[in-house]
Length: 357
Ligand code: ATP
Image 1 (cartoon, rainbow, N blue to C red):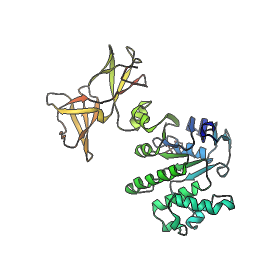
Image 2: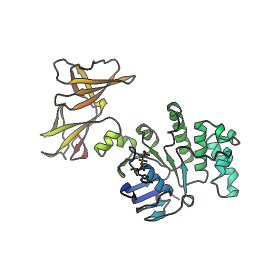
Image 3: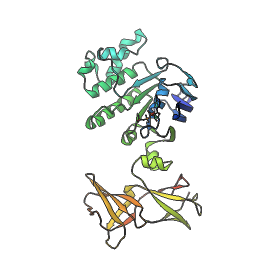
Image 4: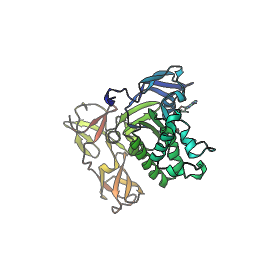
């Protein structure tokens, strides 16, 4: 069927899960289109795992509905069991059967005997483990076990593969290699997937789309670029990297900040509460002992330093400078806004660009 005519692989409306007093997932509306990778991202306790478990069928919604491949599988107090939904799951600890060889682990979910041999060979090829079909899980490296878990999840041709923090068991160096491999495998399989992570860098790398969650709510669903450069809320801005906010007042066609003027968005009416968002790469520092702005911290990060600077008002901002610009803590600096792009500002909490539209 033409994919544009198909219902989304996953669709939830007002999906809510309460545990007693705690609302872990709060009125979430989401759609994941076929063949897309969505990342659920947010701080610890924001409800990512509970949302994934609702989609998998391990939890029953308190309110709202969920459809997988166009079939409604959960509504308040009803949940189709996980094995009856077309979902594949990769757990944090892979959850391989320790007493079964690789082939048997992968065969496990393929119901149709006629299809089994070919399909298992196909997915083992996809994850490049053809030669290891007879090994036991304990005879595999962490990265290889991860690929077995992925093959097992993909084998029954699920509508969606759900991956819960799948790289957190791997050490840092292995993690970046394995996540590249997993991304390639999922792309080759054309799989629709949902990852859960609290790691921003991982989300930017893996997601076609990122859903940023806070306190059970989805704050923004967007491409990685839009989430980073056009955050819908100050929470998303802060969560996706370092961000400082300069209070601003409207002055004619401009916004006046402690670091100078920036163009005023139309929405910023006289008297509105406006904050201009700056990231460390938007600010340049020049040594200037006559300035009242002072370096209060210097953090070495290899190719560059991140400086924390206290402005005369007491507000603090961060600046990313190349490693050969060395400023001492306590030094006076002139802080210049040099973003090279329109800045974001928040007017009464809503985002606007600082270029009038
Ligand atoms: P983490 O990144 O730490 O795993 P998370 O974003 O995945 O966090 P959840 O595990 O979904 O968050 O938890 C969301 C909220 O729901 C938390 O306040 C948690 O304590 C609560 N919660 C989750 N499961 C249960 C449960 N079975 N019973 C009671 N409260 C729960």
